[in-house]
Structure formats: structure tokens, C-alpha cells
Image (cartoon, rainbow, N blue to C red):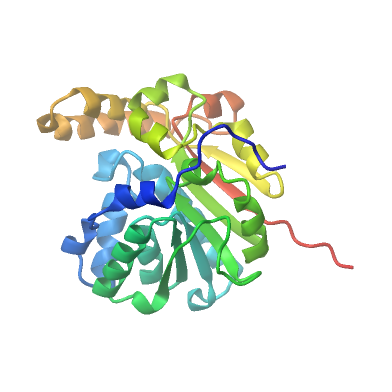
Length: 288
């Protein structure tokens, strides 16, 4: 059943203000698909200790799951369509287009979608990307046309919209999968790292296992926790001067090493994790 939440719904104006005049830093760093892939993987999909950002590892997990599933399908990438849910400035959409997929990026902000189109044109993949300034509750996407859905740090934005799972069911093919990389909030300590004013203004939601599973109750759902000790990286960045960042990255190597040795299958490890990769699968229709 849809999840009913008290959080106020965010409107287009709020997100347009958030993205107003923003330009992806990748626009200055990259000018062709090969350079874009290398730079995005290094800065956007890598762990913090390997020059990425503090959400890079979980985002990399979601992308690798999509790439693995696409390879297993045996379908050529140019025949696969991916929906990037909450695409923002389009950086992930353009990466996937550079990798050969057909991508539809959707964001409620027209300003974000315009910036995404400009970036796609600069990189040379505008023919592989479509950006729609729409609500995920009502998509101008054909029925059963999507092979994969992916979202980077977007689930906590759109989980308050009750009709989104139904739209995913409509546009996804039978057996299609979705992968969402996001913060996780069963561990109360993690909430100290967030911009509470922005979360309140945009009506963002704190994610939990119960909430995610209830929201996607029409899908098969799998949650994979991805970090524990590396949450300390965010704390160090918050309290230490910018000049200390290189030292924090070196310390993060130890945090990352410890995290990779924590079993991910237990309920306790999930409850204590700071980020989670959520995988959903649209169950195949029964014949007859």
C-alpha cells in the first residue's frame, strides 16, 4: 500500500530555486564521452578515500548492479532504456548514455533539466539522453518501456509522493529492476550530518527499512547497507578546516577497509549503516 506521510510536498519552485544557475562541474572538466566516463567514475562513483565523495561508494554499488544486470540480460546496451529518477543536473544520466544506454532523466526542476541538456550536448551524447521536467507521479513515458530505473540521492526526495510506485509499475517492463543509492537514517547519529533547514524546506524524508519496504510493497525489495565507519569522514569534514581534507581521505582508507569486513546481511548491520542501496524488481505478470 502507498505510504502516507505528513511531510509537506515540495513544489517545482522550491527545486527550481535549488538548481537556479547551477552548472555541473563536469562541464568544465570533460569534453567527450571517454573523458567523462573516467572523470565521473573517479569523482562520482568512487569511495571518499579514492578521490570520490562521501556518497561515492554507495552510488558506485548501484551503478555496478545496473551494469551487471544489463550484462546478464544479454541485450545490447543501445536497446536498453534507463529511467534516471530525480536526475538533477543529469550527471548520472549522461554517464550511462556514454556507456551506451538510452536514458530518460526526470526531475521536477525545469532549471535542472535545462542544465542537464546543455551538459549532454557538450559531451556529445544528447542523442542518447532525454530530460523531462516532470513529476515522477505522472510521466510522459510509454507503458512497459523501461528496462532499468536508477536514482542517486533521490529516493529520500520522492518517497513522499504516493503515486510514484504505481508509475514505476506502469513504465517498467516485467522483470525490470531499479537501484537507488541514498542515505539511511535508522542510525540516529547519521542525522547530524544533514542540512536540516534544506530538508525541512524541501520536505525530504528520513529513510528506514520499514518505510522503504512499505513504499515498494508491490515489488521485490532488497536493501544492501554500505557504510559504517566511513560516516566518520562526514563528521571530520564538518568540524575540520578544508585544508585538512587530504588527511581525512588518508584516514578514510582505514574506515573503508573496516567497512568492507562487516557482514552486510544482518539486521543489525542495516540499522547501523549510514547509506543503503535499495534494489527493486517488478514481478513478472502471471500468464492467463
